[in-house]
Every structure is written in structure tokens, then in C-alpha cells.
Length: 312
Ligand SMILES: Cc1cc2nc3c(=O)[nH]c(=O)nc-3n(C[C@H](O)[C@H](O)[C@H](O)COP(=O)(O)OP(=O)(O)OC[C@H]3O[C@@H](n4cnc5c(N)ncnc54)[C@H](O)[C@@H]3O)c2cc1C
Image 1 (cartoon, protein in one colour):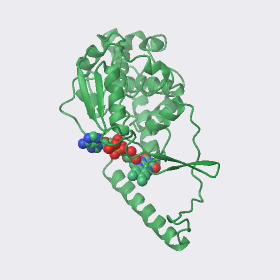
Image 2: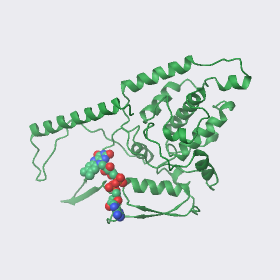
Image 3: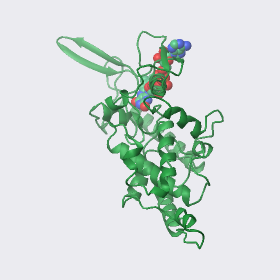
């Protein structure tokens, strides 16, 4: 979910995607579980966010053009929460002041870099914040009609359709979302190879789009590299994760949202996290620390490269 992710030439325009969705009997679709995002907000991002807001606020244009033009050049005020809503978007891995390439490609605003874009992002932030307040509901556009000024109804359409079409809201496993899967798929049949997280998320998304989906899995179980092994013996039951188990960032990571939809309790990883060899003996503390230090240095370097390259 990186707002600066590269352009994809094969994607349909927003108009095409949205009209396709709206023609669906259930009128919508949902989300691919996007790739993980750390959910961390760097100081630079917050600073950029502040200055972006300052810049835009100071740019409220009151020109002597026609009334319609004047109105469209003004920043809207949805509520007093615009800063915190922008932070929600930031923490979810989105930039607070620029559009993703795919948004530009989908022509979500008429002119990029003007007040219209600012208003679009405000609306966008508001919608995604509202859904994240309660990820178990199916968010409809009507829910925003009262709070978004009528003159921005096209931007509301644009932001809502984009978020829906590209799967940033209304995704997951909540009942209200599952209920939107058409009982009679009408868009054709798709075969998904692999029942790991990516394949299962893609399958779910395609089903919401109205496709009939067949998932082919090479192993005898679903889950791919996520696998919880249950163990029993001596009247004791235990489980161990042999693959993925840690959610890095619960705000940006869509798995955090799925956990909320399923009412799963998340536990913080403790500072003390000793490692053990297969024979049950603890790993040498010195070696453990050395590896951890090397790993953290690697993360720091990767983070620096991301900042230098201006990736969020
Ligand atoms: C030991 C370990 C620990 C990890 N810990 C974490 C963690 O704590 N947090 C975290 O976020 N991530 C963690 N990960 C990474 C995370 O598990 C993976 O990123 C994620 O599960 C990948 O999902 P995927 O669907 O892309 O791929 P996979 O889970 O690899 O799924 C691909 C599926 O496709 C199937 N397949 C492949 N080829 C074919 C074929 N030709 N025909 C049919 N089926 C096929 C495979 O059998 C598999 O089921 C860990 C990974 C490992 C191995």
C-alpha cells in the first residue's frame, strides 16, 4: 500500500473499474489484502504532513472568477479531525499530500496538484478513517453525503470508487463483507494458483468482483508459509507457528484489520524473546545478541535507503 508505488500500465481506469462494479448486482467489490506496510510514521513524514497542510491551508484561493470557480478553489472543511484523519492515512502507509501513480492514472481528480487534489485527499482520508473505526461494516457512499459539501460530490464519488475499486476499504472477512459476495458469479471463471495469503486474498477479491474462483493448491493444506502446528501429548495441547506469526504494524498491515474483524486478541511481542535449538537447549546469549544486532543494523540501513529514495 505504498502511495508512491510504481505505475501499472495494465490497470483499467477508475471509470472502467467503477462502472463495472456498479453494474454488479451487489454493486461493489472489495480488497486484495495488500502487501505489508510497517505502519510506522517517521518524523520526516509527520513534518512533511504538517508543512503540506500548512502550505495548502495558506493557499486557499479567493479569486475574482465566477462563483463556481471560486467555490471549487476553496479547501473544504469536513470536520475538525482533518489532521488526525491524515495521520490515520499516513500510518496506513499513504502520503498526506500526493497522489499515487495509480490514482493519477485513474484520473481521480481533473487537475493534479491543485486545490481539487487537496480536497480529494481530505475526503479520501475521511472515508478511510471512518472505515478503520469500524472495519466490520460495509461502508457506503451515502454515509458521507451529509458531511461532504455538495459541490464536492464528484470528488466523493471519485475517492469512494477509488478506495473501493482498489481495495482499501470494505475488504476482509467480516460478515457484512462476505455478504456482498454475489451468490451467482456472472463475470467468468478465474483460477488462482496457490492458497497462501496472497492467493486466498486474491480469490476473495475476485469473488467480490463477481468472478467464479477456483484455487489450486499443491500442498495438502491452505496457508502456504503460514502454518500453525498443533501438538498434543500427556493431556496437554499446544501450538507452534512454523511460519509467519508476527504482524508488523497493526495500522498499516491489513492482517491487523482482519484480526479486528475476527475479534482475535493480539499480543505484544515481549522484549525478552529467547531462542531455543531444536533439542530444547537455549541458544547462546552472546550469539543471539550478535545476530540481533546485525539484523537491526540491516533494518536501519534498509530504512535509510527507503528514506533516501523517498519511498514511504
Ligand atoms: C519461518 C517463517 C517465518 C515467517 N514469519 C513471518 C512473520 O512473523 N510475519 C510476517 O509478516 N511474515 C512472516 N513470514 C513470511 C510470510 O509467511 C510470507 O510472506 C507469506 O506467508 C507469503 O504468502 P504468499 O501467499 O505470498 O506465499 P506462500 O505462503 O508461499 O503461498 C504460496 C502457496 O502457493 C502454493 N504453490 C506454489 N506453487 C504452486 C503451484 N505451481 N501449484 C499449486 N500451488 C502452488 C504453495 O504450496 C503455497 O501454499 C515468515 C515466513 C517463514 C517461512
